Image (cartoon, rainbow, N blue to C red; front, side):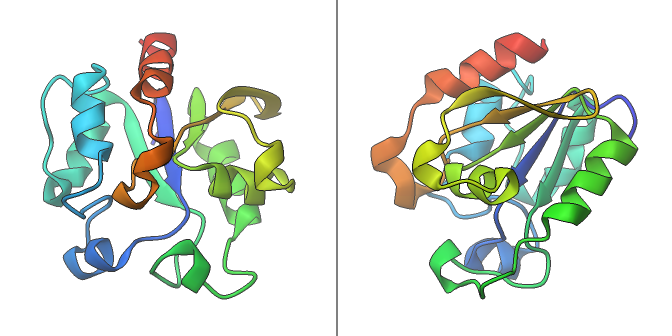
Amino acid sequence: MPGLKVVFCGTALGRVSAQSRAYYAHPGNFFWRTLSATGLTSELIAAKDYVRVREFGIGLTDLCKRHFGNDNELPSGAFDTSALRDKMLKYKPDVLAFTSKTGAAAFLQRATGAVHLGFHIETIGATRIYVLPSPSGQARVFWNQQTWQDLADAVS
């Protein structure tokens, strides 16, 4: 999709999302509420209506398209970083925002502990890379909505 402000990239669909065939579908996930609260969308979108994010210049993808579940349940080598890079070069969003340090670490080929939140110096063509704390309820202890707000402010 040309003209995207930001593409959010997760690691893989969780079980609830896979069953629902919708991104970030678990009721404990902060993703949809945060898009609305930060102004990335002007209204709260239901997970089942995820295609509507395009109306707001937003795209969604995952590093792993063939498996689902928690990150620790995914087989080794499940993340297709080259396919993601190719998509970003093709669609040229302003920002690729990883919705976890785990996904960013896999893409950037570094340890999770070496990945910081916010913008990174690496780019994919003209696409800037941004790392967010995971919106998953399982990562609630690391939650920080301000990092999401900073992204919203940067792309608006």
